[in-house]
Amino acid sequence: MNMFSQDIRKYKKYSGNKSAITLIITNQGLWALFVYRASNSIYKSKLPRIIKRILLVFAVICQKWIEIITGISLPYTSRIGAGFYIGHFGGIIINASAVIGVNCNISQGVTIGVSGREEKRGVPIIGNNVYIGTNAVIAGKINIGDNCVIGANSLVINSVEANKTVLGVPAVVINNNTSKDYI
Image (cartoon, rainbow, N blue to C red; front, side):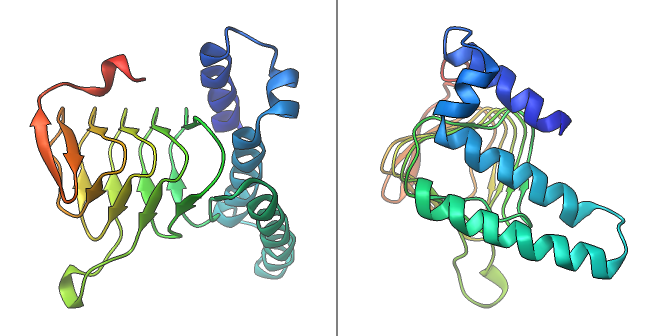
């Protein structure tokens, strides 16, 4: 649960240093992250197979409940780095095979999913310190470099080099600004 404590630290920073208890009680993003972190730790554990499967059944039930009440889907098989921040709850879909680096922020309505055909079919790998704006879609076997900004309502279907800001449908590089001011 060390990663969850890093998530809480980031939420505290953005909330004006509210207490962890207040944040956990009032923030739907943290509810989803807690269930994800607990479920993911079971998934990665070296528990005996039968015990792991039983625990994962309960984990899936908890994840589905969180999905229903928050609109946030964080499958336990995805890989999400520490310091993850969900700016606003609702409409967030992360593919079960997605990889998201450390210290990333996402907004409401974000989809990180599978796309493409044949050898191009796949799921994004997102680097560290990436900011993803409202209603952005990142899809396909692509890489998003470290310190990138994905603008609101963008459709990202091509890889993005580190330290770039992209915007549009399909998204294109609009400048070399990094995510430093967003995260």
